[in-house]
Length: 208
Image (tube, rainbow, N blue to C red; front, side, top):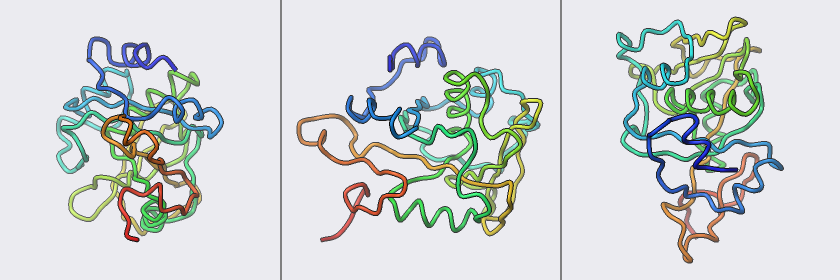
């Protein structure tokens, strides 16, 4: 994967921070059916939407209840390359518990926009067509959660819901953050988290 070419295609002149995933971790993404996604710091939801040409039913200029995480950090993350969300008919609350047990994180709105654009760049269409996806990082207002998905007209729709909600058309997506801030001889052998793995090594912190 040509990281510089990928970032330039999605973000133009926006400079990318060094990727904290190793060449070996990136090389195995085809095998694990995952995507590497870049999200620059500071870009708002509306700036991302406009940059990617995503049509949506949300007016981000007026939407003040959506909360994102790590907005001041450049983010490289790995997520599933599946065209549909996983954990269908499982509440966002239970999905979040599973991800946390595996050392994983959830999407927030900014991550989801960057993921959707990366997915479309690779596969030619948007993910989650006629499905809803819980955005399990960040929140809506105090205790709510956002669910998003693309309709048959490629319009991204958003609703605020409850984490305890579940339906046969709603699922979740995970995010893997690198197990290191930068690649050094001391950090390059640290193991990243994997979906479905219960190994301690993939978690960000643990006790002996």
